[in-house]
Amino acid sequence: MIFWKLFYIFCKIGIFNFGGGYAMIALIEDEVVEKQGWITATEFTDIVATSQITPGPIGINVATYAGYTAVVNAGYDPVWGVLGAFLSSFSVILLPFVLMLLISSFILKNKNHVVVKTIMSVLKLTVVGLIAAAAMLLVNTDTFGSFDHNAVQLFLSIGLFAIAFFASLKWKTNPILLILLSGVVGFVVYYLI
Amino acid sequence: MIPLMEKELVDRHQWLTNEEFMDIISLSQTMPGIFAANMATHVGWRLRGIPGAIFSVLGNILMPIVIILALAAGLYFLQGNEVVEAIFKGVRPVVVALIAAPVFRMAKTAHITRYNFWIPVVAALLIWLLKVSPIWVILVSGISGFVYGKYLEKKEVQP
Image (cartoon, rainbow over all chains, first blue to last red; front, side, top):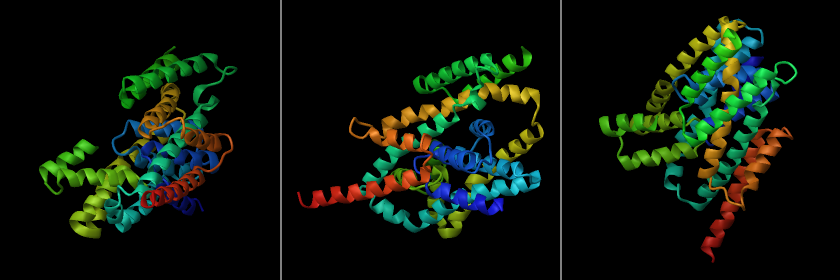
């Protein structure tokens, strides 16, 4: 049953989510798109886009939306999708919540301990690779378009990717602005023209 | 999120001192899970015990869940709409760029050197090409960090 699996998978994602919201996006992508095949890569990027422009922690937003889509894609009524959404967002915070109650005093006391510091610095390095892998997995013909099918889309996609990438890195441009602008470009090029 | 929390918790309600607030930030970043939810859990727990933790974490996530759900449901009924599809076609490559950019930002804060840059490279290749589960990669790197940390600790005690 998909609900048990959602619960189990999002509990797992929560407790292994070190390094912030983008690390969580990478974990959700791996489980929900690559392993379970509940959601396509296109749907997933749409979910991340919608989560970016919505208030609230991006990890919670993506978990909620992914839970909803996974249940609806499995053939359930959208009403059950709402249950899937709440289930996945509660599952994703459940184990970190329990762990915070159990060991936060210990961590606060030992935050400068060499073992705690070493674990964190190794994890930080690993998470960089984890997010890189998620980004590379999302570069495909579904999200960028293909040369044979629609070469214009492919070249425009590469251009938009490059601009957004440099704007985000060099000028720290607001991601919401980048998403809204690319939405306008998409609307003009793919609908009006 | 951090400036907003600081204003409410430290300045307005004076539930925490500035130093306590900074400590809780680093605690919440160290622990697994969503940073804001971890902050809310710990602050709630500190002020009002377990019920406080439950209420503050729920308060933190409930509105975002409702908002994103409303959008999800709305977009579900717009499925196949040509305008929506055109907009998302433009947005998708930008989303990928927004996931790729933090890789380079975080590489800086993770203090990558020529001695440790193999760690993220190997992690990425394992996940990307060999389809190893990221959970395993994180588990192994956490355990390796623990073992290496213990080794460093021993060296500190008996130089």
